[in-house]
Length: 127
Image 1 (cartoon, rainbow, N blue to C red):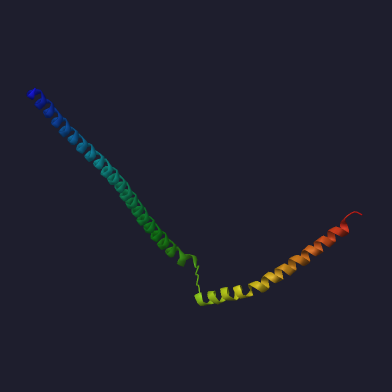
Image 2: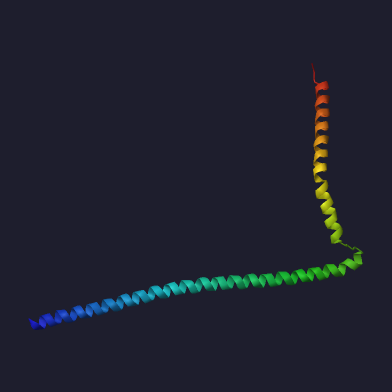
């Protein structure tokens, strides 16, 4: 009976050891899967950012080439354009200050037009 007890104890210890190893390998596999997913997502993100940077680079390069091409065409077309920012500011400021008077003028004009139109329709209406 001692041999049978020793054999069962030996199998129990082996089973528990194998179970612990199996659980450890399972946990390691799950951890590796998580790190693989993270690595893949980071790789995709890195590739996406790289693609966007390359696209931005080429867009800037194309823009510069277009600007240079337009600058070379401008002297030939004799088209010049100047913008005086202080005058633009004063023009905008005067427009905004005159805006209330413009809106009241528009309201008065609209009322008079509407009343004139209504009066002419009433005159034309059959009685």
